[in-house]
Length: 99
Image (cartoon, rainbow, N blue to C red; front, side):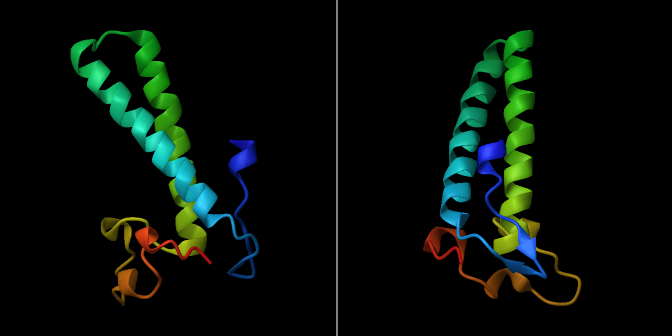
């Protein structure tokens, strides 16, 4: 995951334009999680598969948090809606405009 930590903030402004790379990593890890979830449906006691699931679940969570810190919510249900619906304020993830 150290290689993937390409995005950080300085004074609330992202200083690295690695959003597309981070989004690609999130997609890859999500695919791995979906795949192992299907496997665990038929092999619920496989300890190795459970460890694999936990490892990639943690990596995905960290990557999503990093992405959202710089680029806004990745999914609509991750929006902080305390005082404004911010989902519409930035380009959507699928628009490919990670700034």
